[in-house]
Image 1: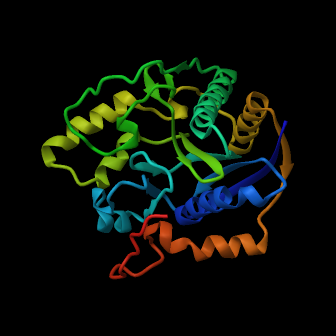
Image 2 (image 1 turned 90 degrees about the horizontal axis):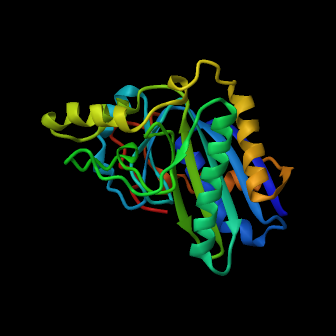
Length: 277
């Protein structure tokens, strides 16, 4: 059994969540627990970019107009809209065989999500091979890309995930879209006019939210509990609830500039810190 710290965070801004996942991954080696499992929601709406993406992929003035934050992740992957979604992170200590253990982590999380969906009466598949692209446009959008091991329903992506290998730990965090149109992100992405309609159509064919799959979804608290139990079972976790310490919150706030690209609570003419974590 892996001794696991358990945290549930509601309605923090995106920079806090991304800085928190990074902080937990960097400091776990010195802790008495072996893993951290965290669930969280985003407030306000945010777009997260992979650590290797350039911030100019999105129209920041348009994001401000809509009241959306823009942040970097410590993980790779592509741009993802966080609005009415449930996110999770799972962090493990790992000193040896990191990449094989990362593969194990990815497969187990996919299995846990799939198990939870099936308990909701939603039949899922685990993508066996990376599908060929159905459009010639390269958008840099997470939901426009499919990879082996992802959870899908009738060929549509229902969960997105990204990973990072640290010196002494592994991080996977991901997101499940609860409601909303997966194509909404296109409205703030820098694309040619000719590409917009095609990409919107493609996103709606490639991804979907849970409310389009079931008319009887549980509330957020119940869904978190179901996902937690599935992850605990497949990963053999021993859960201990442990809220944030004051010193931890300070460290997360101190790292804000490393993750925040644009925020609705800063002036439009601010010079944004675009450094990667």
